[in-house]
Each structure stands twice: as structure tokens, then as C-alpha cells.
View (cartoon, rainbow, N blue to C red):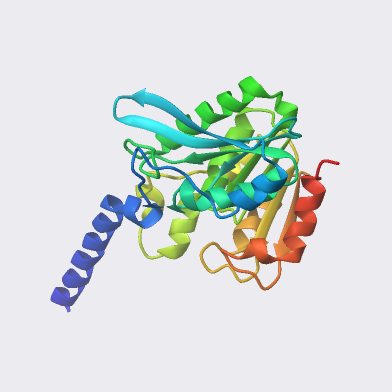
Length: 276
């Protein structure tokens, strides 16, 4: 029996160390793009038929020779405002850029960010790097727009980053799609038998950030989401004063198909009304 428990304890320690060492590989799933990659989007040609003045500018903010934050700025003449968008944990802006066209059609410019190691962004990943890069992009849009015209949108992994920015600034609104209460609480939910709360290098405490947010908050979550359960949105809602946030539970949708829901688009139409 002593040998059996020693083996179990050894396995437990090994698993704990592996989780601690390789947590980036569990959280982040980047697709890297070559520095000379040219962005082309499926929706772009059709959109340009009606909006030929669309311009897509590449943005790069260099912290050091080896650390570059890259993004895209989808520009329109006379826009209603700008949406600063933080995407999920997989892919790159070559994939996520398609999302911009729905907002462009409503008359909003879109700035999208690739995290370190994603797309054309380079450098070491860390929570500090994620949040510092986000601040650089916020400063970029703030130099172009009053904050009353800046809308923050976070999707999945990006929800904690968008919430952090909203807690430090005064944007027009904050929209969180499939958010987590905190990234470390999500990890603890996935690995309840390991001490991940104490080993997490990316806590991203969304609930704490939201407590300091002054602008309207909208939460979306699919009832069938198996990656981040809708209980996280419910906890976020319950952690805030009544009326501070509005929660929209999207029936029969999971983590990656909320955009296919009429209920989702009805709300989006209200909070991002199209220009005349």
C-alpha cells in the first residue's frame, strides 16, 4: 500500500509539473504568419463592391527588436466609431479578420490584435505582454477617436484582456462573448484535482476588472458551450451590481457558433446600430 500511494503521489507531482511548465501550450494555439504575408479575406471582394473606400492598414508596435505586436485596422470614411477586437486562443488575424466585415457593414471601423506568437506578432508570451500590447492598441485608437466612440469587444480568451482595458479607460461599451470568470478559475474547473490556481501565470481576473468598469457591459454565452460553460457569465453577472451588465444566453449554441444565432444578431443590431 505504501508503494502504491508513493507511485500515485509521484504521478501527481509529475502531472503538476507538466501542467506548470507547459501551460502556454494548453492555453494558446497560435498560427504564425510570415512577415511578408499579404492578408486577403473571403468577404473583402463583395464588401468592396458597395464600399470601395475600405482600407486595411497593418499596425506594428515594436517593444524591442524581438517583440512586435501586430494588428489590422479596417478603415472606412466617416465611420460611426471603432471596435477594438480581441480574439480567441487559436488561429491568427487571417482567420479572425472575417469577423470585421459584419461590423464594417454597420459603419464601424475595426482594429484587431494578434497576441505575441500569433500571426505576424513576435516575442515572448506573458500576461504582462498581453496587457501591455492591448494598452498600445487602445492608445492608437484613442489618438484617432474620442473614447465615446471606442467600443471594446472580447471573444473567449480576449474577454479578460478587453475587460482589463475597460477597467482602466472609459470606452463607450464593453462586449464579452463567451467570457470566463477568470482564466485561472477556468483552468481549476478543467483540472480540479491539480493545484493550478497557485501555478497559473495567466490568471486574467475578469471579475476583478469588471468591478472597476464604468461603461455598459454586454455578455453573450451559448447554453451548449463545453469549453467555457455559461456558468462563468452567470458568475460575472452575479458579481456585479444589479443593472451593471446585461447577460444574453444564446440557446442551443456552443463556443464557436454564437454568430449563427438570430438572438445574437438581434442584440448586436441594438448595441451597434447601423448607420443610415
